Image (cartoon, rainbow, N blue to C red):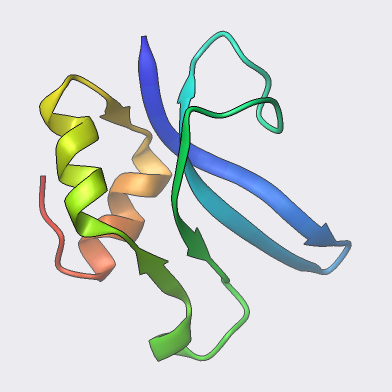
Length: 81
C-alpha cells in the first residue's frame, strides 16, 4: 500500500518536512517514490506549506492514502480530498 506522508529533515528544534509518496513498509526516512511538496512548521503562515496539487491528485486517484497529518496540511491549503 502507498501513503502520502511526511519525511523529516532539519536539526533539533528546527524541523522541516517533505511531503512524499512512499510504500508503508519503508521506514519514515527511507526511499520514496516521489516528493510532492514541503512543510516548514516554524515559518510564517504563508510560507509553511508548498506542494504540487496536480501530483497529489494523481496519487490519490491511483489509491494512495494521505496520513492524518498530511490530510490536515492539505486542508490548511484548501485542498480537499
